[in-house]
Length: 501
Image (cartoon, rainbow, N blue to C red; front, side, top):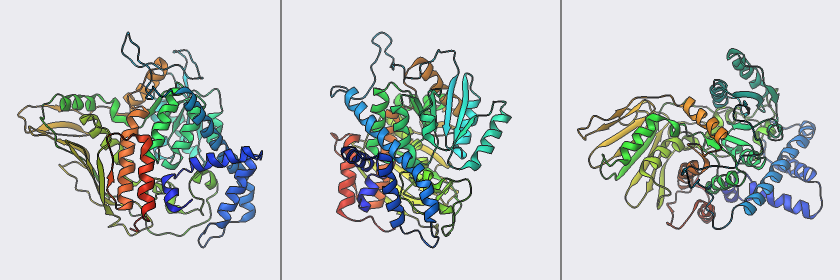
């Protein structure tokens, strides 16, 4: 694929599906075909100053080829499932109960009694994975039965955490497909780098398992809509990492905004400002012992192991992450969309750069994005090098109304300028959100932050990055849907090369 096509389809899902279809037509073993593709691709790749041992690579490529073939197969099956299960007259939303008005889902294949423990497997055991492991292990009727990571060094601290929480040790696996194929696992938690979200989520939902998926849920806007339709078709419960959706404090702020107390709200702003450590400039090195780097790369371009592109710092590289706008922009922009009841904007423009950090990172450390709606302007700003935030808060959303201003962050909310003494105190975030996921599974109902909810804020962040990377203003029409946005992306990215920032 061209550089533009690669960015437009960073997970290679459509390319993998096309290759699998061609392979099936020729009656060739898909594992062998994938193995050949991977070997050819990596042997042709510029690997820097550190040579990759060909014999070591060939010894591991069969395992990775099976992973790629399994992912492609899952995507093909998922596509067929959605095509057959979603009729043109259905917008992808589950049916509502006419008696209760609530949304109910048919049970997934992992049917359980409501008093049976929920058996969970976790994929990705670093920072976010450990946080989720701890919070889920503290919930009643939840069993952590399997841990998965391509870095074997992560199992010991994860098992140690389970021991401290007086929970039994969990099975350790290196390949996520084992969890997907395990019929005893009811739900899977995905806390991997962003570039793996879509492929793993597609396979989990195709297997009719319930899913907790961190945000941004995909690297392409339309893929989020695809996952939402697939979850509906297979009756799966999906909770995303928008934890504020389950917070009583955030819910009270949203009620205040929508009550009209602020009057007309022409401007909303979300931001994050903090001092990220500069990652420096480093050279590729040999892959650390215990790390299956080919499996970590997965659908991303194959390359030599680079310490700055691995744990934690992967999010500052376009092959794997979405920068600060993906990390903080998705949840904070979601608060803005929620309060204003907004969808996609009419146009998006962005300006910024990596202006302070002189290191290996690619994503901007300084960025401003303008999302224009007919009656409202939504602004995003981040500075990854400054401790001084806006409105005295480092990560927040502000609703500027003609009668008053409401500012909210995880420490609470307050209205200024109306004469009314309205505010909200901080409340727990993680426990209510994960408990909502478990309850939704038990009752087969939509959770607070399902894929349909996450699709819009994910789209804003991803399209903001597209506007920044191309230097173009993105114009959207009111008739466009998320499924049509890749065409917009492709037009922007094939008209001119990405700006070298």
